[in-house]
Length: 312
Image (spheres, rainbow, N blue to C red):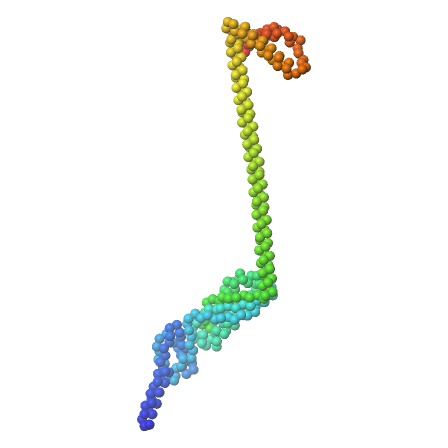
């Protein structure tokens, strides 16, 4: 092969090498850290960039997207000395590529270790029964602790989420028994409260029934009394009208004799009924003197009908 061709191939290879060392295309949401002769030079954003050949070099490449970091399961001891396995996931984002490159050698590993340490500390502050209901508070406390530590590294911890809290099997069995007992206790309480309410309602119903019955009886007695009073008034009024008419009839011709006859008939009739009702009679001395009885009755009628009678 001629020597000139080797020169051309060598120059072409050199040009390709220079181009590969000088031209850089940075993707969107990425940042490249450039060093010049071993020292920090600048940070390249998204787009096309030209570097000084053999002087500039890209040493670190960072993604500016939000990144999820899996936190492995670890054993934590609660405040009541129970061991639980806890794992989680952490979300972080690089804000300053320069500090993320030179502030720490491996920020992902460091964040993972800090997350585990902070989680153990927070779990140790609470009892086992509260670990499940305090997950949100634990997550926020871990984020606060990590955010303080990662600020010099140019990394922002956005949030932390606990994935699983796994107590030992014997503790799980005890917790299930406790929850079962608690449910049975609530069922017994609800049953007793229902029976109590039913008894109260029944007693209240019986009370209202007695009250209504007494009010009905009272109203019945009032109605009967008013009816009896009305009947007495009607009888008295009818009797008064009858006596008045009898008294008026004695003033007409033949009326006096008719009244005598009526009185005599009533006397004899009642005396006969009295004799039939009992075999033993206690009679006044003048019971057989019908004439005296008629005279007495007519004198009373005459007095009632006289204009000078006190009843007028």
